[in-house]
Length: 289
Image 1 (cartoon, helix red, strand yellow):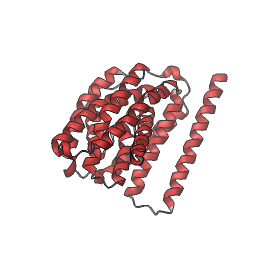
Image 2 (cartoon, rainbow, N blue to C red):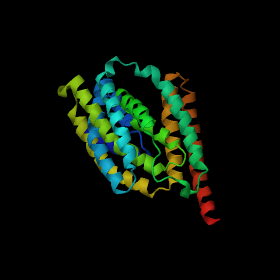
Image 3 (cartoon, helix red, strand yellow):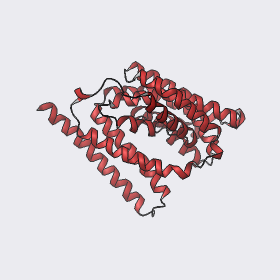
Image 4 (cartoon, helix red, strand yellow):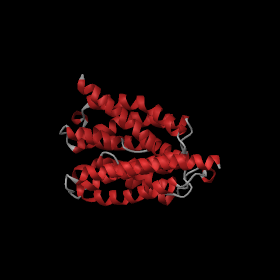
């Protein structure tokens, strides 16, 4: 019973973060399963199977609150699904850990850019109603993000969200909603790939169902928060979270002295909190002027 509650809470928190910031369900859930000694392929399979339901609930919620660019979703789901299926089928033969630091370094740089771009932007009239995503961009971005998602247990949001937010005039609300909605197709494709590679018996359905239940409860709450939060504040929150999650990957990869790790995390959190306070005050000053 205790494990049931823990997994349900993790599923809830993971989906609340993912649905609000466009990333972290796979990373959070996979990290939990790996701490229990679960093999990477089985952990990733369990997470993706639970995501089939949680992403569906999240997508429906985001569509209901008007957080989705449907054209961008259509452009991303086909290359993303192909990348996820390929990644799931060949997970055991891929050197994912070798390339992770380089991807994280790139995403951390994008996170810094996203944070500061939204930090000083208060004029919401300059936002575009749709995400300006070309077919060529969607193919490369979708395939790479889908592939990374299946091989790493989470990567669709951490890659697509910062890349789309880095585009000039993009609405943070539309990006988060679009990424979460398109993730349903990626979760389905990855799950099919895992079931072909591993078989039904290798999946722990108890974990899958419990993670699903927590995620379903959190999905509409997260979509409502995205609708209500000002775009500049949402952008700063997402940018800071991108920096925090990728800093963790880099610290692990670079074998930083254990004494420095908490100092680095605290420093990031202090700066992130400061930018949130600045964004709120800056926006109030802009509204009152």
